Length: 423
Ligand code: AMP
Ligand code: GLY
Image (tube, rainbow, N blue to C red; front, side, top):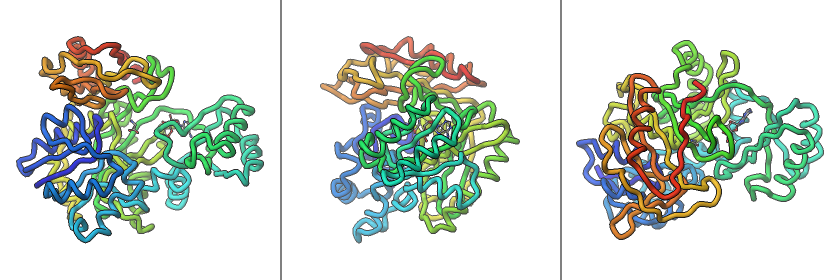
């Protein structure tokens, strides 16, 4: 089978690495890819949102399946683009259609979905410029901290948590009236603050059956002890130690089943990954958000724990045969540590030469923001590489990752040395 992966991060390198192991794979193309995917696939430099250019690649490379990494093309309707094109409609796309991708594309849509299907989540109301005064009044009924969410996609920056009522009112006004997040904040969801520990559950569905994939916990803040600015993710652990069987049963019964059934009831066509961001409040799981793709860096710990042939699993998704798949998992813990450019998530420099990544044999090196320049691997983004290791528990796995990071170098390299500190 000839497969095209859309995307260029650590998530896409991990998917490429896994698909590359399948005897069923004939050709792997990644658009646009990175220096890591270039080693095992053919990179083609087109944007994930340039659907016409993607069509050209699919036809020229005789692609038989497309795996979508990031949310943007899904929310923009890449799957629908394929279904509406006579030359493309027979080619399966792993990733939901636009109507279902709204679960990530609109926080208000996701909240209404949860309410409709009785899925536990924080109480909320949503507001527009026309209802600014009602928004202020609603804030006054809440206790701090105040959670304000831009409705649309805001590159992971659209959630503000404020301790002070006046700051919350000012931010609500800036989001709605001054379009702080552009059209993404035309509507703002205000919700009850939930105090607890976060984890993520990943589900793969073919629109009928589903498989619950391993849990993971990511570390979003740049600084140790979860301090400083939010990033795309600085590291991850799978499985999550506190997600024991009893808690997983609650997640399954209260959240996973109603989500998959809700998609069916609402006629939302879904063949792909569902990423459910959860928070454990007391002993109960509540949903914080849905994403319509795998997480990054969660992919770097979840996918390596799946023993099945991923081409076979994706074929089963395409053919709506996922229920017949027997998912086999590696029982060990996987951890990943993200190496980032100095300055990230604010301004940082690119094109720094990376050394040592070829000297590592007991960890997996997944490239994120890297590219080839004159045959050398150089930095090309804020998040540069994820170093994934296995162990009997997360401490052992992390020890291996951290030992191997000692061998790696690029100018101003930064990483968190305390992944798992809260477990
Ligand atoms: P989201 O983009 O919805 O995942 O929100 C980003 C982050 O904000 C989450 O990972 C949480 O850490 C935090 N967050 C979002 N909603 C809430 C909430 N209702 N209560 C507490 N924290 C929240
Ligand atoms: N690591 C969080 C995300 O992929 O959204």
